[in-house]
Length: 502
Image (cartoon, rainbow, N blue to C red):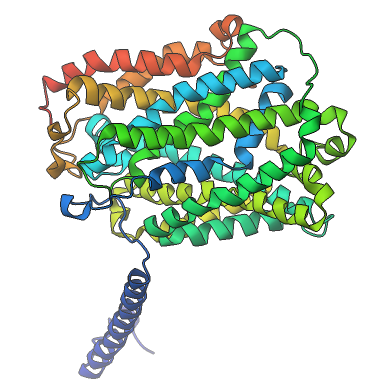
């Protein structure tokens, strides 16, 4: 009987067998790595962008086609999500057409200025937006707004997938489920996003045109129903401000991704030019399409076909009903409207990949396009789950995300305009990825924490209405911007007494 307490001493044959086995494993890993590298190199040859959050050197910032920036924001917002956001004024807040359109006009003109201004920073610094924020929030502190930003972008992608899937399903008379439509929208968006900067720019320069044609045809068919909107009850300040908060949440949340699409432009481009292209790119589609959504939904009860299509808050069904007099051509246009959301989802997937690398800095070695696959795997099931609660999801989501985006904007603006005196040379780009030299982030996070004392009482949400909001309506996003900016300046100067500016 063998003594189990005695250890077996390996022989030369055992050692040789182990070495041979390890060599086989090493060869397999080497082959796998070689295959991966060949696949990666082939993607690069095909024009797929692998760069993530690594800075773009000055010599690589050579793009002079600045007008492309206008089309990115134009196509990203010339879609049925903008149409749906416009319907919230009459449907959720009980506003008349005139009041809804005035809120849409003035608050978009106001709130789009921040993301439009931040696009001008990309060419100057060659850094993605959330990497720029490290110079105020710090290397580790910026992880918190990155998490909020990822949640915001996921929310927009989910809403767009739901709308696109609903609209595709509306033309099939029940033969295509919402879930299948959602998968189609997500996969098309993935294919566009996977390739990166060049393909996204090419797609966005074209994507707006079929959407414009579809809306023009819809207006030609149903415009007669929009001429005499029914009268509405007088608007109150709380309803105006609550709808304004929703509209603000729609556009101001572009701020944390604004310069993600401008880092390849020449650094000597005038900032006013970048601002103007972006400002027009935001406001032209958002204002026009949101006002159209408000006008159509106000008229819907008086048009039986539209009311039937819109039953249950189905925006895709409403658009299909508007275009149905054109027969098969109308169905074709409805498909184009459904696909319009891909022009918003694709660049959002792109920025989500960059945010993953800021959120988990070790992931900087992973090619950007791999995160587009991760984003798609997250978005599809969440969209399917939320498909039947679209309006409540849209209202709650847009009203909530404006708070953190306003606070984020207030901090990065004060850092640039006050602390760094509007001087891009004051950013030491050598330390963009060095936590020891970057700010601690305590001033930024402290300002956000202090501002919550004013933001929370000013919130008007389904699950909570603050004491200030009960009298004024939702003024949380306005107070978030102002209070965070004011708190940040003294806290940042205090921080600079212990750690020098970089």
